[in-house]
Each structure stands twice: as C-alpha cells, then as structure tokens.
Image (spheres, rainbow, N blue to C red):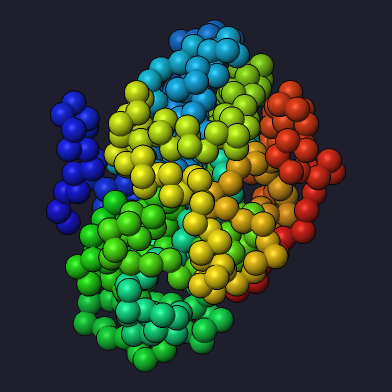
Length: 412
C-alpha cells in the first residue's frame, strides 16, 4: 500500500493514512489476543506513572487528524487545560488507530479520542483498564458513494470501505445494507461476490477519497472531513449521513486510563472540564473551529483546508441535502457534526447489542461474554463529565435533559 502524504507543507510530518490498514488490524488483533504482548506495555506505563506525584502529570493528547478529535485540539489551542491549572505537552498525532492504542496502553499519551466500539476491544479484548469519560461529538460521519450510485441497492456486487471493523461506521453501514436486502461480506482471495453481496474492506480514511476517484471502491463510510473532501473534489456524493440513521450517535469518545481516574481524580476532573468547555466553544464558534483545525491554522493540527472543514462545521448547505431527499428523518434536528459530552447509558447498551449483530473480522469471542447493562456501568465513568457540564452552565447548554437519560432512535 503506497504512502499517502497528507502534509505537503515543509515542516509537517508525513502521515501514512489515518485509519486501519491490514498491518494495523493485525497489530490490534495481537493486542486483543495476547496478554504477553500487553504486559510489557502496561509495565512501561506503570513506570512512567510512578515517576510523577499526585496531579503533577502533563496532559498528553494522542489523536488522529479527523474532526472527531475536535474537543481535544480546541482545548489545547485555546489553552483551556492551562486555565484549569494543568501542564500540557504538544498533542501527538498518530498515523493509525493501532499506533494510538499502543501508545496509550504504554502510557506515552494519557488522553485520547477513540472509536466508541474500539473501546470495548481495548478494555475487554486487550484487557487494558481504561474508561470512557465523555463523548467527543455526535454525528460527524457519512456514507459517500461514486457519482453513478443513486441508492443503497446500487452497491450490490460492489466494494465499500470502512475505517475499522469496530466502528460505528461498520455498524451503521451494515444496518443500511440489511434494510436494502444486501449482505455484507469480506471476500477472501479467489472468491467472487454474489449479486446480493457487498464487499467490505478496511481502509485508512486518508486513502478513501483517492480510492473512490480511481474506481477501486464504490463508496466509503467514515468520519469527516473526508466526505466533504470527496464532494468538493467532485469525485463522490453523500448518500446518507450517519446521524440521519442513528439520532445523535457518538462516534469517538474521550478515553483515559483507569489508574488516572482513580489515583488522580482532581486531575481527571480538570481535564474533563477543559474538554467540555471546548465543546461549548465549538458549538458557538463553528467558523473559528474550522480555521483552528486547518492546515493553515497556528496549531496545524490537521492537513485539511479551511474550505473542507468549514463545509463540515458550518453545515450551511444542510437544507440542500433535505431538498434532495438525502435526509430520511427531517424531523431530527441535525448538523453534519454536533457536540454534547454526556455518555448516555442507553447508547452504550444499544451499541453492544448492535455489535453482536454486526459482521466482524478477527477474534470477537469476548463480545459474547458481555451484557449491555454491565458494559454501560463498567466501561463508562460519568462522574467527571457530570460536574464539568454543571460548571459549563448546566445540561441545557448542550441540549441535555436534566435526567441525563434518553431513548435511542435508529431509523434506517
């Protein structure tokens, strides 16, 4: 697989994609399947943690250059962590989810954003004690297809790319395919597709737009701004928005090691305060958020243009999607990406149920041992985000019901 040079500007690092390729998948599979591989990383993490006393630990952000990382990067750029009295290091960008997870387990970074389903893999597959402390955003993904694809049914006999098996993208795509009477498969060498099958391939998001343009895939489902980039380049069009399938779903979440939550609760609280404040700011200043994250911004956090990011954050053209019939649930107030930090139990429970009904590659036997109610209690720690929301002005600031409860709505 050729390198994808995301940063042509001198002084910027090269990024070889920003998702799961086959090598990354094997690395994650090895982590999930072998305690002998995880143990050295845990030992290194404990040694690092042991050198710091109390709250004397810097915020070490790990991220991929996608809009899912927005709250972490906004909090860094606006120095919201420092306003909370915390020391910070420059956020560290990773080339893949696998590298990010390995660095997290080894203690090289301590605050990351991660695909929500992948947090189950880390905690229950790799058995690394970490917890979700907040949602990073809602929506923020789409199913983008070649210009000659006009319906989900047109994907029959074709290939669609996903960023990872353990992703909301894979879950939602398979729901959409099933509704259209199509069967998701992952072809092996020598196999051919049946007329009612769709081949799913794991591909780094940074390679999806070019793969679509070259005809290697018929579509992809992934986080922004790659869907917006395909539109602006004229090589594809949005067929469905993820938030129009599962109302106000989370894609990525803030993930932290359990030892930091237990041993440094005040530190964890201040980190969460900054992340929640960053979401509040992003809600109010969408244009500024796009400029802040762009390659031309002072932080140079991502390789994307202001134009591409603005198409995502401003959503000025969302009404056009409604008039074109792309929006199937117009009564749901939607944006391309939105922010609210509370990790609803109902969502976590439904996520577990959906994963068990989704075609997944690799060793996923651990899922059969999990109950949705247990995961909602065990994987999530909402103590800090509840306080942070109150500090930010209360649930109403984010449109959250004061009960911190909701019912999930999934309409394909």
